[in-house]
Length: 248
Image (cartoon, rainbow, N blue to C red; front, side):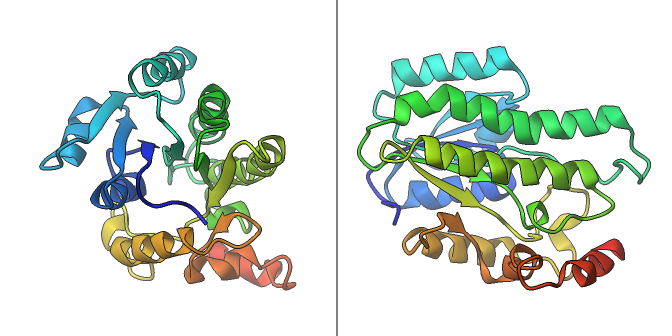
């Protein structure tokens, strides 16, 4: 169970999509929220009309940017006890779909190595704090890949495995929660905000917030829509799932 009030929370990827929506939810519950993202303009839009919300420009693909963010957090927000790492990208023009290795490297650098950079830099600041939590953001595609986005799917599978290691390493010092969304109507890819069959963002956020209050022992925050992907291998349905995903 995650404490939903009285925290000091950093939300990366807070300029749009799931990160932005989670930042708003936690701010509305009376937490001190700092949003981080690549552009100040997007962060300003997140903070508009929300007194007490702060921002830090952060590029998780750059070691120096992560280090500078960690130093500022230690100096200006010594009570930081929760990090929700929602920063990530997806490219539809990917390996096998018009993309090349440069695209794959960018996706893996931001999604997987970016998660590692942020976690390794900030876990020491969280360790031992009351209610200390680090949330990673994988995907349903970590468990059953979308064939047209192999680098994205592999990067999120890497996030899942890194999360398992991090949870074991930080046991007793920081609770580690993996958030694994299904396809959600956000701006992650062009046109995704209105794509039929994708989960509306407000419904996804409502269910995710409820899950924070009743997490399973696995430490995974999973909405109902993602369970077919999460359980495809266990249920012996991986080939059927890949056939379905291959048509998307």
